[in-house]
Image 1 (cartoon, one colour):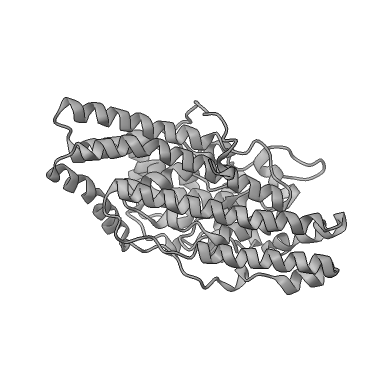
Image 2: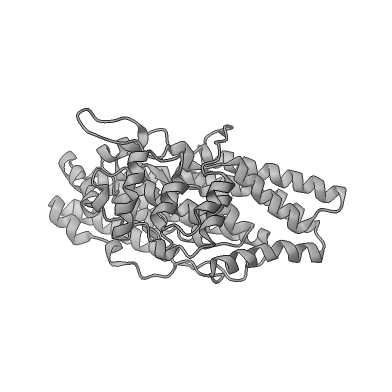
Length: 405
C-alpha cells in the first residue's frame, strides 16, 4: 500500500441537514443579483454578519460570478447542494468570510470556476459532490479545477492564525471575529443530495430486473458511504505551518481515494448489468449537465502556464528570510519539487471517458497523481523548513497572508 494512503481515519456517520430554502421561496427569488444568490445559498451555513460582506466581495469580483455560467437562479436554489453553482457561491463567501480584512481581501487562490480549494483550514470543500458530479454526471469542472495551485496555496496560506479562529470557533481574546461556515458542513456528505443523485440514476435507467435493482441499491449505499468516508477527514483543528497543511492535503486526498475506490465495484457492477438503451440514457445525464451549464466536456482549466500570483517566489523568499548557503540549496530543491509537481498536474480532463466507470477510473488516476505531487513537495518542504529558525519560519508563513491583504 502506498505510504500516503496509510492512516485513513474512521467513517463518520452523521449526515447534516439541507442548507437551502424551500422550493416555493426559491421560485420567488428568480432574477436576483449574484450577491443575493450567495446570501440565500449560504442560508443556515454562514452567520448573518458574514453574509453582509458578500456585497463587498462581489463588488471586487471575488466571487467570480461571471465565471459561474449556470442554470437559472431558481434551479440553483431548488436543487440545493446538488447544484455546483450553489456550492461555489457558498464556498466563495466562506473562503473570504473568515478574513479580518474580508471586505478588501484579494482571493488570489480561487479557482477559475470561482470556487476555492482552501477554505480556512479545510482543503477541498464538498469533495464528495465533485467526485459524484464528474464520475456520474460527467461534469469535470469542479473536480479537475484542483491541481498545483492548491499545493501552492497550502504552502503559502492566505490565512493567519487569527483568521482561522473564525472557522475553528476559538476566538482570540480582544478581537472581534465572526464564526463562519462550520467545517463539518463544508466537508459535506449531504444525504439529500446523494438521494437526489440516486433518483436521477434510477429515473434515467429504470432498473427492470431483480439483479439491476439489487445492484442499484448497492450503488446507492456506496454513494452514501463515500460521503461518510470523505467527511471523516474534516480537520478538527487548524494546521498552522506549511508542512502541516500539506499533511492535511495528503490525508484529505487519501480519504477521497478510499471513497472513490468504495464506489468502483458497485458502479461497475451496476453499469455492466445495463442493456445498451439503459447505458445510453445514463450516459445522457452527462450530456444534459454540460448542456445546462453551457460547457464543453473539457471545460476545466489546465495546462502548464500558471497565473502570475502562482509563480514560484524564490527571490521573495530569499529576500524576506535572508538565507544561508545550506538554506539556499534546500530552497532550490523545494523549487525543483514544485516544478515537477506542476508538470505532474498540468494534464487536462480526459475527453475519451464517456462512461461513469471510465470517469471514476480517471478520477482515481488524478487523485493518485495529486497525492504523488503533494508527497513530493511535502518532502522537500520539510527538508527546507527544518533548516529555518523560528523567526525565518514566521516570515515564511507571512508570505501568503501578505498577498491576501
